[in-house]
Image (tube, rainbow, N blue to C red):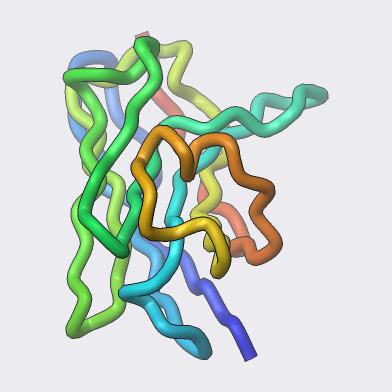
Length: 128
């Protein structure tokens, strides 16, 4: 049974840093697309970071590039999102996700996949 259990997050002032974590189990972690998404109230989820764990390739959209970084540990089966230089517009619910079929191509390809497995969500709040 695939499980993604999140921790971390919280509140910080603009310019600060936060880390959200995701502990994975129940699937072959090294052969998966892994992603971090965020969701604003009343909006669709949007992807902010992707990892093709088959090859290590990552992808970040322009909105977070240079500020957010995926950190993963294939032994511990954890996927973290390190967020630096946070802005008020980064305030959202953050979710980790896994796709078990699209790995082995690229982080960009992983960003196009439909994700079937999700963490429970973690709130990140950035004050100005």
